[in-house]
Amino acid sequence: MKIATIISAILLIVWVILTMIVMWTDELDTTLYVKLSATMGIVVVSIILIALAFKEYGSEKKLKDHDYLD
Image (tube, rainbow, N blue to C red; front, side):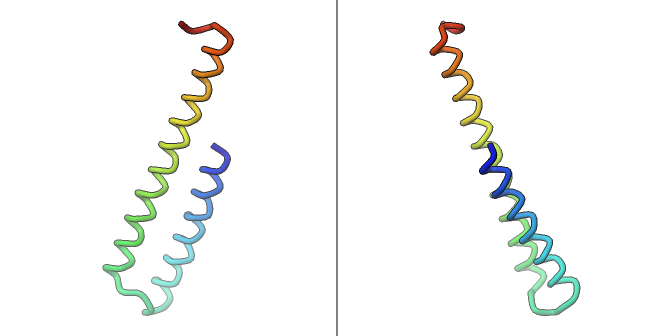
């Protein structure tokens, strides 16, 4: 979960910088900006969901190892 948080934070920082570039310059086309923003959003949500799945699997495995679950 820690790695997912770090990756998500990095992507957020990149998105903020990208947004500032779009606001202050004309270097990036609006459609490209929207596509990049949507892609970053999808990647962040995917990373978090995968991290939660791994965390849940790990905690369930620990409970099974200690005979708390059947």
